[in-house]
Length: 432
Image (tube, rainbow, N blue to C red):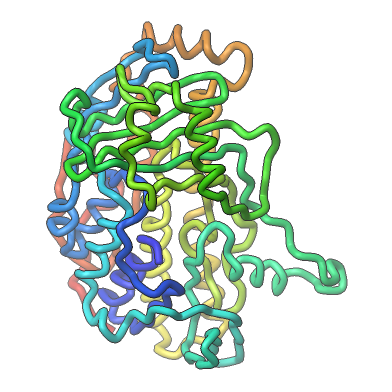
């Protein structure tokens, strides 16, 4: 279960829409996972749900960003995230994926009955008036829709692709995977304290085919080392402990903080949390079919290099919930056609915004790994002349300002110098 699924459960609950959360693993809260950056639009939504303070207590403010080369030469730095808070009213926070899941789970109303663990979905059966979800233990759950947040290698997305195409044209061939990896990354963290590493500063190294993104938070030092693949890969792949260690050895001289190389941090890692993964990018052609709809990485996936995967997922979930609630207000028992209309509206509303974020991520990932013979020179030249704060505001504010919020929960959100595109003065909240 990822943050997108639990956030969606929060939103559905706030909208008065009953839901059951199915988690394949044996537990919800697992203290694993990489650093997640919580941008102002995401914090605004958590504020609207009343859980901002709970998440903030587990987080570390990220005030600044420092860029340097893989060998440690300085490029540029600035208080990017302080400036962003001045513009939008909310800070930028960092915390582990595990702590975000913990906060979302522990604040979810009715979690004891809403959330089921060991719930491995093996089939989704749809019919005229609802759905039946079959689990590996032989049980089944009946409902009226399925919202699938089952990740980048989503079986539900594959099902939607098959249902949405003429079987006579495709035969029994497996649908093409729209999520393609051009990078692989080593994620890890260590609990050891290094006072020579600035608290909260987001450190990013650039280099030929390699890059890193790291931060020291209150609870741990988090690091990600990125390598460009020789050729794109779409198949799911797991890596052995030996392969993880071999990759770490290969990347050992990469500078991950100013004056600190990976080989200084790697021996101090928590071994169970050191993971080697492919980083996919892509956009599903179709996000829904009948009573089934996708959210999060199942619909749209980007690399960690633009740091907006979690944000994009919750913004999409917000639009979906708004659309569902509007449909239910008109028709308490909507037909499949009425639900498909709501899903179509959701997909159409989000695809343009997601494409802009994906495009930025594609550019950033290629730029910081110096893809192309002129990129290093461009990076060095831009860093000499660049006002990193102004440049970041020019890229981020157009993406963040129009961000959606729940249209049925009135709240007094924080404001900065730049007005939000969607004001927080919502109509009086009405429960279904």
